[in-house]
Length: 156
Image 1 (tube, rainbow, N blue to C red):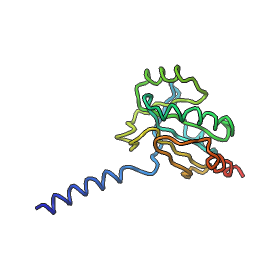
Image 2 (cartoon, one colour):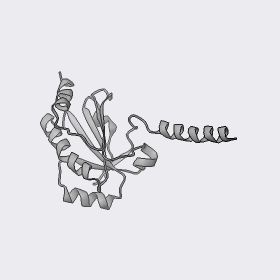
Image 3 (tube, one colour):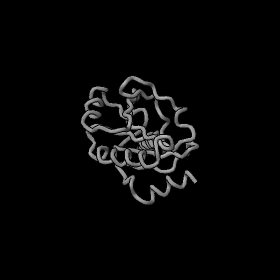
Image 4 (cartoon, rainbow, N blue to C red):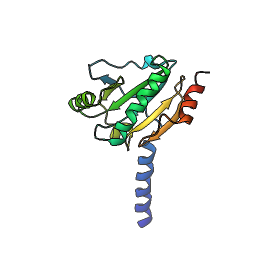
């Protein structure tokens, strides 16, 4: 009987772990002005998806670096998507407090339950063909020379 219980418990954790994907499918996103994001806008561009929460200090720290990265390479070459599932009024307050050229998007899907994000920020860098180039959990130095070189190499 104890073997059966152990097998059940292990199965639960294995299934739960399998739900945590390397990179989640991008949910439907709406910016703070009510505009629906069109995934086709990412075609042929590098893009960064940063799943964040307004209360997260690492998220606040990462945002200016992502903004500088987009400015350095140009919004026509690299797109940064800041994605949260928090209520829109909180996101509007955050946007007002931390002014930025980056667009904040709201997801109706729960980042934790539906998408599998367990820590913030969780940020993904995708290549021009949609391949995952880099994943960062709980912040990363986006102005690091290795990261800049990785991105630069995508334009050669």
